[in-house]
Length: 412
Image (cartoon, rainbow, N blue to C red; front, side, top):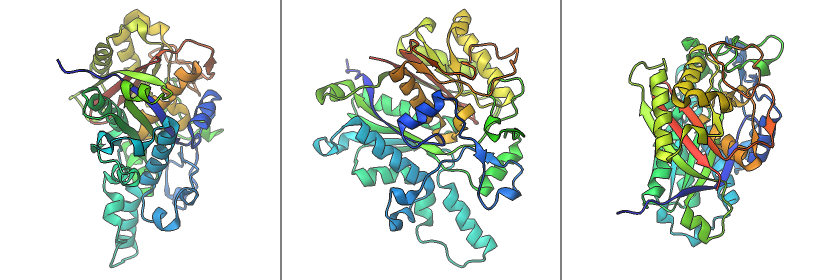
């Protein structure tokens, strides 16, 4: 029988609205700090929704000017997060067979800024030519391809585009690849940079974006609260270094956790309306894949978008999955602080789970001041918890289009 290899996380990289490294990111989560602010772009006055979770990021702090100019913001984020994950893992890439190290990356909108710039030049400015690298900057696999180019990784390289579940799927599928023995290590995660005029206007048209809090823009995203009004768009990236347990132990690597469970499924019911059955199906499949019971889960990082429909549906799905045990499991939505990173959401939230295990602390759901009878679980409301048992975690991602992705990790 073919050997199944155990898979562990040895490195983490983060570029986010709450800081551009893992420690700053998690410290701000635990402090209940919001990364949601007024949009400062020149087009802000033309928007109905003028808030977002944007990232303080100067590409010239990381890249020479000529290189920065040839990379879309989504690729810049991904490269920085990947560099961090590699350095954090301590892996010596030169000492490994790079045919056995690959890149799986998730994104929802890919090079949105490059596409929009091209349209502006063509249709507003009546330009006759576009930038020579427009296609290479905007293509959906640009970020994953550039990671492989920069680090000379010749293993499998795939880009996953399943809306809000993209990076959860990329991590889970990378885990499957290592489990099967087809790779020794994988950089996996997601990147998103969609805070462009056209993209925000498209989301406005869907009527799913949150209303701005008149007193505090940072309080506009209110998952699980009765007065929630919608999601807040965010940008950033998170990448993790995954390795087989044998590979990690052989080089004496520090291990954050073992990825013990993964599942993906499709609602196949409605392109935007989630279902209790579909979300519960994915969670049950992940528990089965991990060989765990409901009582084994210490924390759930919820998809928790802050929309009326998602939060009540996810709460019901957690209860359908865990039964009475659901009321004993802390659940939080860190989107209340870093916003919805779309294709990178699952990766940034999985990173929050990994840091929660490392520090034995639970990040809160902030802005939860009005209880909703339909959302009656323990949402770690407003205040993070320290000194608690966090050994096994579940991270949920439920996407437009119906794709569900669930990851389970366990502290070794």
